[in-house]
Image 1 (cartoon, rainbow, N blue to C red):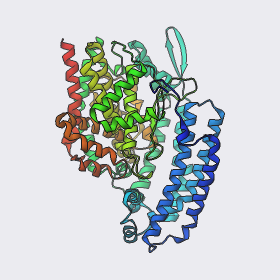
Image 2: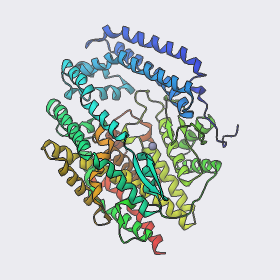
Image 3: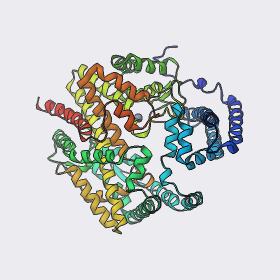
Length: 588
Ligand SMILES: [Zn+2]
């Protein structure tokens, strides 16, 4: 078997066949039955060993369930048209929900326990400690059981229903766009393809149509947002005594409020960095000033393509040069046939890496077509796989990195690859494409998301002061003006952009984690360039933690203070450096 050939993956390391699932399900049922039998034994003065045995039982259930869920997910991803795969996935999802309900009593009991017995029970919990602590983090904000039950019951047809309505309304939207003399009816996803079109008038038309449709329902969607925000306030600030709306998310992410404030402050302070990039982009596009429509405009360059085998060599070699240990983990993905790279009808689009179980080589899905972007995606997903593998000695309950650290190895790997390609590439047009791709991504991940979070912070205040939807739109335009300065012209329909961002409805303040992750990697990369070899052990250690400690503790051990403005500024220095390089090319 030649590992350079694009093949389907082999899922037999998870289950020998779909039929074997019956035995695995029976085993899972047995484990859950045993767990239920432990219920009456749970008490504040139970022996430590018995408590840890219950945790291990919970872990065994999680492992068994992840194995089945992993198989179901991957089988369906390789062929979404396979009815058997779909039926199997539905069955396992149903099973998963039932089992979670049956073992819920354990985490509820643990969260409700007083501090003294809890401390005693987890003093020797080893790798389970952070998992157990995380469950208890919300204890100070937890209400009595009957109150919690009422909130749960009322949420189903209350705020959750409201968010469902938002999805139903916006998912029904269709958009009309005239392309090459032909009127097309498009979904949002299809419409957004045209914001990257080389034709400036088409980019403008796509955005105008997007916000015409959202704007027509703007008051309705804005009102849904206002209800969402008031509910957030009533529950979290009045009943649960959080100090601010964003503090809820910070506690979920286990990141101190001060660190998030600093991150957002520093993004604001560096708005001019991307403004400089947009001025440069305007010159390359031959425009006096970039319009908001042109942010993602392509700059005509060289389309270089890479054979699959060539891409593998390039990526593995890049990891090898940085760390042979990392390269070894990446190589296993190919050697064990845990990668599915070819484009096939019915196969899931995009790319992902899925670390199903600790100690098992992760599965990687790509849709490889040979573009430079595909090579970067390969480096990115293998970075995720390496991260999972390095953390493979942890429990299934703690090996997944938490959200703010989840993109560390993947984006860092992409940076290594870009740097290498820039060093080796002599064709100026290819070099420029590489840098432009990195900067476009960095803008969308760092600055755009940070400004969404800044808007959310203000919007929550404004709504709670009883301001109108119009005032929120005004504030949103102010937010854009600050973000783009005079580098980008913003037309008025962008006042409705905020009602088109599902994240701020679904998961308030989720978005800053994107800025956090990307800037963290850029700062780490900067340190690597300064420190060289001595940086590597500290970096590998960050990854090896997985999700077994708080992000702050993991990073502080590597000498990183996430509450320090200097740390976050380091990330922007890297971005500035790349813009310098681009400007130097311009002058040649
Ligand atoms: Zn990723």
